[in-house]
Amino acid sequence: MAFPRPIRAVVFDMDGLLVDTEVMIRDLMVKAALARGTHLPYEVFMRMVGLPNDASDAVARAHFGADFPLDEFSEEVSVGARAACEIGVALKVGVRELLDYLDAAGIPRAIATSSSHGAVERTLGPNGILPRFDAIVAAGDYARGKPSPDPFLTAAARLGVAPQDCLALEDSHNGVRAAHAAGMMTVMVPDLLEPTDEMREKTHAIAETLHHVREMMEARDGAGL
Image (cartoon, rainbow, N blue to C red; front, side, top):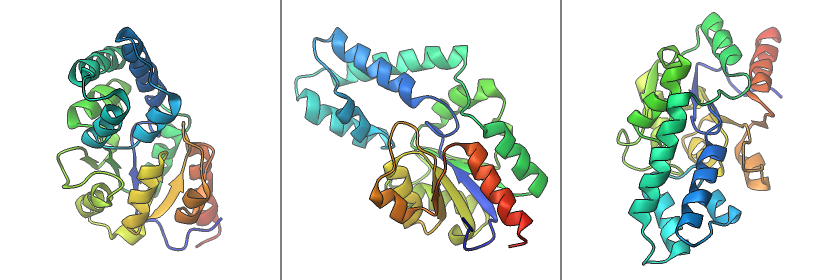
């Protein structure tokens, strides 16, 4: 697979792409729902993946009903997530190696996430990789969250690189939609969500891991493209 243009910058999603947090959040939500006498079906959670908090809350509210104590539920999940981050959340396979490759190639990179700046710090701070990013774009830095292109367009602007010259790496369907809408070259690295025909149409490739993303970039360099 050849990228259509030279890659001048890379924009990463965070949850489910850089760190293995989606499964953690799912398990915390299922536990919190059971504690309140109800159930969070897998398919409902999957509709929440990749959405900003307000949109994710809307999905939860539609499922649980107006009488469900959503604020209390969300706080319990947040407390559990913060505790897990203090222990340390595992990086996804290939993260450090891809960052090493970008360092060697002199390619700038950013994070574009639906999470807050505080969540980014808690999640990535213990792993020591935050200083390896040139820009962090998080909730509050853009007007509209994914699947709007705003997070990716903001990241490109902060890096000083045209969106079409950026490679976007995403694990969620809404993230892919956002990156595609921004005009970026897009690769999906699936986590919980499987690629669909729509995802294949909106991406340049589906990569099994970030190791494979690095190999694709190295192959392009080796071909002198």
